[in-house]
Image 1 (cartoon, rainbow, N blue to C red):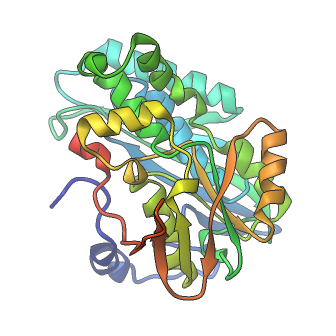
Image 2 (tube, rainbow, N blue to C red; image 1 turned 90 degrees about the vertical axis):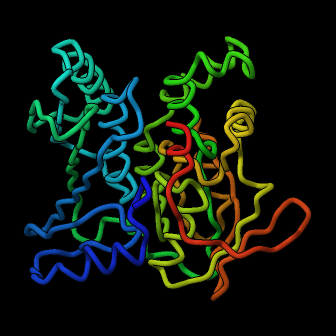
Length: 326
């Protein structure tokens, strides 16, 4: 099999079709593109999400905290606690564990999230450290946003820039290779994009604003995340490539490696759908968060319109472009 997320059809066949038990307290269970599970506890909902870090080495502890907390934020909810599991290879060192946990501790402190448990193991089952985190949030009944809530006529709003996380990972792990195409300042600027990795601020703002759906942009990039929103919402979608913001450093890195920035992992960017998207864009910008309307939710077709007006079909996500590099 190819690296990256399991293709949608295999996910349904091999994973979802084998989940037999149902519990009435579960409000949101496993679905394609849905970021979190939600369980009812009295007047409140416990929101949970789990994610691994497999493609990054430098800054992996930071990413591990933010990636799972971003999923909680995509429900319009602030994360409260997080569990972290480290699977360390036999040739790993105490310094490796210390570095990852220091990064994770700082990131959690930034977000006001407590690391409430986890597991640490040295094992021959992996050849590099694998980090998995599970974040937990809390909301009142009816107070969460789902991925599948997109409605026909909604504008599609994207925060920040396409390929944000992938740009940071490649610039951090392959800085020496990039010396021929990027200046020292450009490499450092690309590496520093990890500072924009959290979508908790915009998630909470959008949740209070009243968006219809939200989805954080992870593996598969902006096009993959957009397809997932349409798939789970059972709608069409229309995206305009010339409206999707991409940093110049991302373009240069993607050109150098021959990868597609629109399908490059982009944690730190959030997709939201709502009526009158420009109003939400103005609100986000007033809070210092870059945001752009990049398309709209339509009835059936799932299409991309390029800079010349050419129309093509929006395909389901495949292996992320990052795996062509790492």
